[in-house]
Length: 113
Length: 116
Image (cartoon, rainbow over all chains, first blue to last red; front, side, top):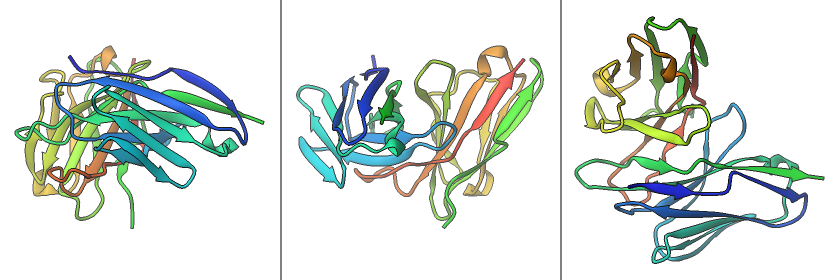
């Protein structure tokens, strides 16, 4: 079956670093996406990994290990505005089907002063 | 450039009624996806259009759901008749070319559907 796991909630302090983990088991794999979603708003794209390793993008970095079915999102220099839900999603691409994303439940991050 | 828009933002209907949700993708995006999030669960895929054709409808829960994309522009998702378990947030997303390894899906803000 298809399964993506991530912690439900995390709390961190403003200015600190937080790592949000995601493990996945899918029948296929063609990329892992991280999205940020503020309450009542659209999920917005943060990062994409398809090869093993670290992708850095400003205060945000994402890591992927395909052999372990594991990814993490690293947020540095946390700001209050980073309080949001962080969604891990895998593109389980069957070339006969399409680019559907399979999502985890999301990690609700609370940043405290 | 306008993002993905969805209408309405909220809808409250009685069980047994019909509701139609609309999604306008980013201009030029051939790919349009519908997803849904029910309370306490993850966002789940419903259907994928490439232009006006259904590329993948493996996530559609049953025949009470009908999605259309006439002309390959905006899409509608009709629920008829609505049941209590259909309550949730319905997201639409669009992208340029699903065949590309890196193909970002841009999401709309969602339609919150409540069936009473």
